[in-house]
Length: 333
Image (cartoon, rainbow, N blue to C red; front, side):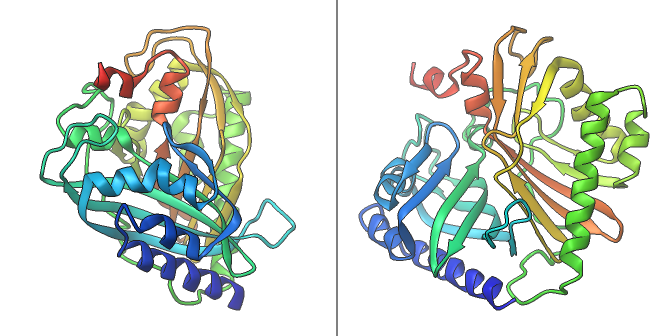
C-alpha cells in the first residue's frame, strides 16, 4: 500500500509542477521527476518520444504556446500494480480535461480565444522514485469540434464535453479497500472475455445477453469524438457496438501494456489494442482491405457487481491515417 501512495504523491507533485510550466520551462520541469531513459507515448502526431526533452518538444511546448491559463481538471485518479506483469510495476491513472484559453493555433486547428477542454487520460509508470514511462491519450477530434472544424458531423452517438463519474468519487488520493480493486479487475477481465467469446461466436448470445452479464442497464459509454457518447445498453448497441461490429471485421486483439484497478475504478491501454479491417465503411471512410490499428484507453467505474461507466480514448488520427485519411493534413491544406 505504501508503494501505491508513494507513486500517487510523486505523480501529483509532477502535475503540480506542470501546472506552473511555460513553453520555456516545461522541459526542465518534466525532467525533475522523470528517469533518464523515460519513455513518453502520445496519440498521433506525437507518437513515441524518448526522454523528457523529446516529450516536451513534441507535445508540451506547442500545447503551452497555444493554450493559456491552463488547468488540469482531474476527474479520476488512482494507482495500482500492473496485473499483466510480475515485476511489481506500479501505474497511476489520471483522467479528465486539460482546460485553457485556446489562444493560438494547435496542430493547424484554428484558435478560438475561448475556453476549450482537451479530454485526456494519462498513465504513468513509477519505479525507484521516478516516472519511467508515460502514455498520454488526448482526443484531438473532440478539440476540433469545439473549434468549429468537426471532421465527423454524422457520428452515431453524441458530442459532449464529458463529465467525470456520476458518483463524484473518482479521485482516490488516499488508500483504498484492498479487496475492492481485485473485484473491479476481475469484472473487467470477465467483460474482456465476453468480447472475445462474442468475436469467436457472434451467435452464441444476443448483444443484450452479452452485455447484461457485466453491465448495468443504464450504463454510460463516454466514447471518443468520431463515435461519441451513448447511454443505456440498448442505445450503446444501436449507436456504437452494432456499427462497430458490422463495419469492422477481422478484429484481432493484440493485448494491453497495462491493466490496473484500485477501489471501484480500473483501466487499461494498449499500443495497439486492436488491428482490424474497415470492410463496410466506418466513420465515413470508404471500405478497404487495409489493416489498421486502434490504440485504446478504457477507464471503468464499477457499481456493485457490474460496470456502470466507461470512458474511452482511441487514437483516431492514427487509425484514420493508416487508411489514407490525414485529418491534420486536411486542416493544413
